Length: 366
Image (cartoon, rainbow, N blue to C red; front, side):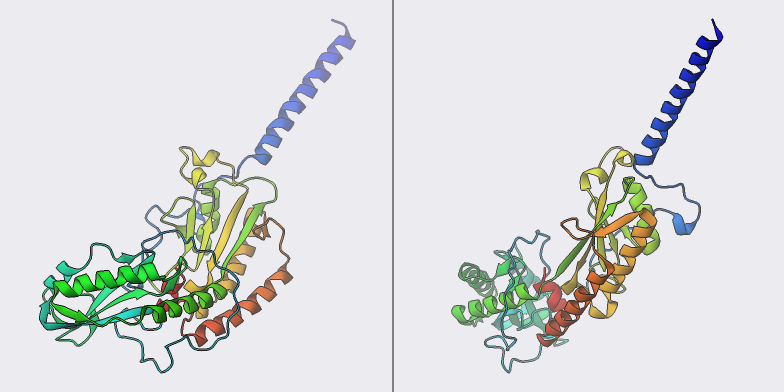
């Protein structure tokens, strides 16, 4: 073999090695970022035992059964005058039912009723159409409104159905079903109910629904990868130092609220299919979402400020860019008008006694 041929072979080998090295580098560069092996507590991924806390006894008694909100909330503007029929209304009941957001039917029994008998008389379902339904009794011993309990005695009861939620306003059909369920309960315990006027209550429901629909805010932002994609483990590892824990649904991390049993402060979401994959670390995710359900979180927790801090930190740590739901990058200055609008929204909710994060607000905006 001549020296010229030898040179060609050497040059070819060098080119081949360079191509292989470049392809390996390029593949590594664009491969999903994976979670690093734990070095210290501050960098560890969420422990398997850390999960989204479930709502405890402090949660609203009429919380929905978990259906996805399907009501089409439109931007309606209404005058902030009191709801019809609520002028001079008595203070909120000491039980879960409240005249501000519920139709309440007083039920008086002819004689004392045991808690066991009251429980046996309750309908099998605790819903009327798409609205939560509940019955409370006035405990003869403690004089407190409560859900009927075994071993207790009651003579005064009240049945209630929620006027509105994110699935819409109470309608005539649902009101009729509420009357039928309440009457059946009253008949079972030998009691007499006092029903309000249907048209009046349905009108109240529509007014509350209009107010809620024009004062609802569910903010969602998108974090997009600039270059390399992310694996689910990498996302969890990046979010854990900021306080996020694994949620109850696949592809969901939550930042718990300060008050135990309250809804999460923020929610971080990514593709559920990737989370449920047999080999999740092979999944390549290019975006995650950060969401804040404004009426569900107390104002004093400053959730929007926390969202901005979390988004900035994740963008730095994960080499991402913050975008709106349509994928357009958001400049820092775009956040200030949103913060101002939220303060005005908080004020309006306070005026209607539906302060963000309160039990009543969590029921109506659910």
